[in-house]
Every structure is written in C-alpha cells, then in structure tokens.
View 1 (cartoon, rainbow, N blue to C red):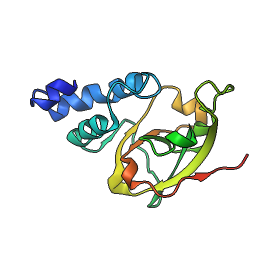
View 2 (tube, one colour):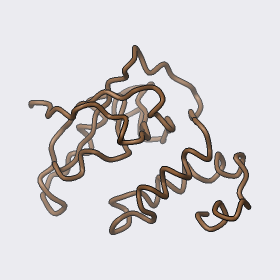
View 3 (tube, rainbow, N blue to C red):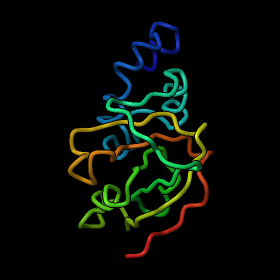
View 4 (cartoon, rainbow, N blue to C red):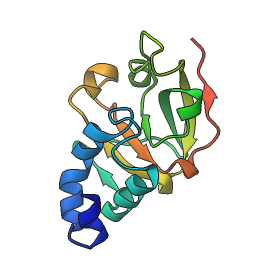
Length: 147
C-alpha cells in the first residue's frame, strides 16, 4: 500500500477502503515497530482525508477528550479511544510490553485523522465507543488517569 501511494497508484477511495483495516491489523504493537513508521502512517491517513466509519458519532465539544492505555514512552502515539472504559480494557494483565498506564488528553479537530469502528468497540464501552487516529503533534498534555 505504501509503495502504491508513493507513485500515485492508490486513489482516495482505495485508501478509504483499505487503510482502516490495514491499520487495525498492522499498527503497533501488532508489528514489532508497526508495519510502517509513524511518518508513513500519517502520510497515508492525510492522503485519505478525514474518515469516520459508519455509523458516525459526535465526538463532543472541542478540543476532544480522548484516552489511551500505554507505557509512558508510547503515550504520544496515533491510536486513542473516545471512552475511558474502552481504553481501560486495553490495559494488559502483565508487563511484557512495559508498565501500561491509562492516559487522558485532548486533541484539536484538525489533528483527528480518522474515527474507526471495530466490532468489539461497543462491548468495550457502549455504542459510541470508537478508536480515534490522531496526528500526535496535535495532542495536548497527556495526564495519567488515576484508578
């Protein structure tokens, strides 16, 4: 996909069809460092244009409050959750990939690249729970959520 996009072979419609699923299966930590570097993912998501999976949701007042389960060194990443319970469900029961904590941040609307909906989102935190893909440069300060 990356090579096709570099030479202009992938259209916006192609990206909208393939990128959300590709991200889901190849984003960190699925691959050792992700299938692509963050800069490559950002370029692909920006080429796709803002994308919200069906059914659409309202992200609330701006800046949007989002949540993430991650070790400190990975807190400023691209994948966040719309709901705290959803992010909490990603806290591992072990520390094989580092000491995970729950984080809260805010993000500006122009830094939200995509809002994805996976079949498991609803049982994690309700019908409006979604994964939010962001440009990390648009994140506010990450604050650890207690408890």
